[in-house]
Amino acid sequence: MDDTHIENASAILNGVRIDYYVGGAGLPPIILVHGLNSHAGSWRKNIPSLERVRQTFAVTMPVKSHPSVKLKAAWEARLLDGLITHLGVPSATIVGHSLGGWVAMLYAAQLRRAR
Image 1 (cartoon, helix red, strand yellow):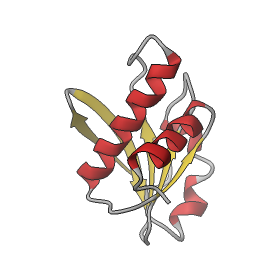
Image 2 (cartoon, rainbow, N blue to C red):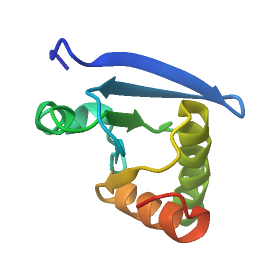
Image 3 (cartoon, rainbow, N blue to C red):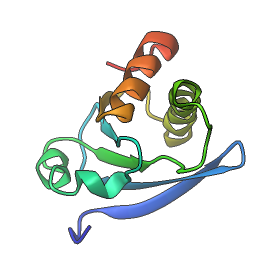
């Protein structure tokens, strides 16, 4: 990411480090969740446009989390919930790609703070 408006940050949640990019302002924030075998940098072309209108987070989920993809999605949804709590965000628009889309749907269906 070479955009100067974007900051790198991280959080430790239940002993797991979550790295993310954050930029922009405006509510509710947008949280971008990548697909399997990817990282937050996969959103690099989308972030500049999004951060012009909303605070935007691009999250890098841990590569090694759970051997079962089905359980990995649920685990990542709980991590996402922990990150949102850590950030102090009351609600957010969650956008996911591939596995990240599944994580976003699980979060919205089970944890009920997504829009």
